[in-house]
Length: 430
Image (cartoon, rainbow, N blue to C red; front, top):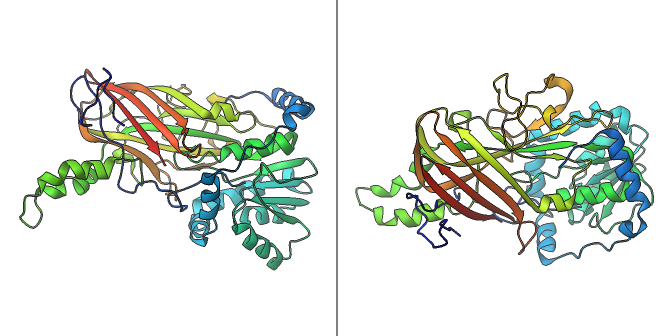
């Protein structure tokens, strides 16, 4: 839905003092496949003592532990069914950046895993569970609500790991594990990091089973945004209709814009498309984040364009960090996704501070300048681009919230202004 700031409605095209149109299209986000859908299968920061006391307090709170699990909705069931398809798992496993980073992280933390108890939240085929077993875990609980758990159990048998890996077919909210665990591993990230709300299942596992001082992989996550220019994408989707085999089909252009840019688009861009330094939307500490904290996230932004160019929309990407439980970097200790000026020392809502030592932690990045992953980047396009000059300011706010229709969907509310014009855009990533 497109809303002007005065409460009326417009046709979704940029014009002075009114609303911005579009949302993205191209490779639109759909439910039902890993290529377009992730979901629940299975923040603030503090120092180590605070984390330990938080877990202890939770484990001592019997009423909290006995709270009934949330019901499994029809959307949950549809999601779990989608993960029974082998193609989704093939796409994930063939993403070498993703899979190699997880394997490296597990073996990098072998001292925390060997001889210990691990839970793999949303295990899929069980590949991460098997990595943990290979790293010496005493026992691994591989949890998945999808029917792919049946195949995971067969894979465990075929690799002679039944004495170490126990596959639990069910939601992490429902299955029972009769012991505390030392490690949680999960590949929970969706498009735009938080799409599909799977992080909630990791939080549930943490609060139910993780020992004080336990390890969570990945330990931290950061979502970024930046204005982008993408004239080729606009031309391919819209300008094509100006002349089709010598026929003027420009009457289709308004519909073409709506169809192409109506929803967030998952696609790959390059650093040449990015107009400014990125800014942090949300930093998540998996040791302390709460489900309530993720229900609605608001971040203000202020960018300065590094070039004169048409401004076609905003791009979003993320990275996750694998840090051991004895090292607790603060929000200011995050790895930069772009190479930033040396005086950059901003946190959420601003540019990210460069880590004193980039080798302090293993990082999986989906940034445009890093090797591509199946997550690519998520783009929110406008129906009409804005022309910006070098050093022109683009500022506003972004709110991401779980849809009341389906908590796995994500509402995107953008308010932004530049060059004396203000716009509002709303979309649902579904």
